[in-house]
Image (cartoon, rainbow, N blue to C red; front, side, top):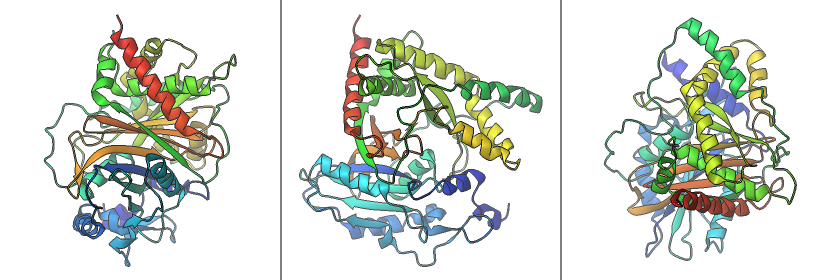
Length: 430
């Protein structure tokens, strides 16, 4: 492949870029909360440290040129690190609520397409001495796994790599190869399982504006693993996360005697391989999983979710759908129609993602990262988005809505905290 070919956006990256609009900004946000310190972080030192490491991520100094027939990466000739690593002046930003408002505003702002599509905004110090860095990276530049690699390469202080593990959530091993005939036979079955199950009208099926409201909560990774291990058929950490979300939504959406809606969650699945070369582009598929909100018992909810995800993963549905959509994309008009079907509010109600972050403690300019959160924006007719990321044994969960379409997301964060406690207590009770 020539250098020119590598500079052209992949079909996935170009599709994501094309989704950007007046109400869709197209980026993810990672909120990095730093431990308290006697004085503020030195922004100039941070700029120098980041600038010295950008060569490891070529797209970090390139912008996307859309003037030709196909979008492609090109050098950002006027690149200035000060445009990308900066202190965000927020008057009176002293509390957690103030921080949430500040990052909500950042989430609603579009990145400048005349520059590389990432920024690090330093916020604080807060009243307790903590500071935060709001990291924005456009999804056309990186998916969830790619964004984690970006942070590891350019933001975290140098640290020893952890010993390799046999498996890691979100990054799969090389899949078993199937014959072309097998693939043709398997694709329709995967499509029947994942699509064509129109649910009740989603409570999140609402028009959205450019406004964003974020809220965050945490859960100990060891506790999520213990909950999963306690089940007769072991549930994964991601299953437990879906169970916690289901319990939170059950409480948040309860309206007296009204029936709870039938919700399907779209769970993005990274198809990056553990042994592939580092890259930051997109290679994602998905599974659609029913959330049994009507079930009152948290353990039964978890077991139903676990059984469904296990079946879908055993059948390689995510791989089959990835291959199918790429095959359909080669037929003019058909690929776009398939994407519209898969993105329908009747096919799924909300997206819930979970990405593995650094397993060991990390720091920025000598300041320990206390919390790491992820947030992805809602979509048209999908006014709620939930994202999770782990860091040194703590799972940070970010909730993002359009407050004009779906207000009071902080109450959902509290409902999810209650759901986690309910599930933890249920597994420890004989």
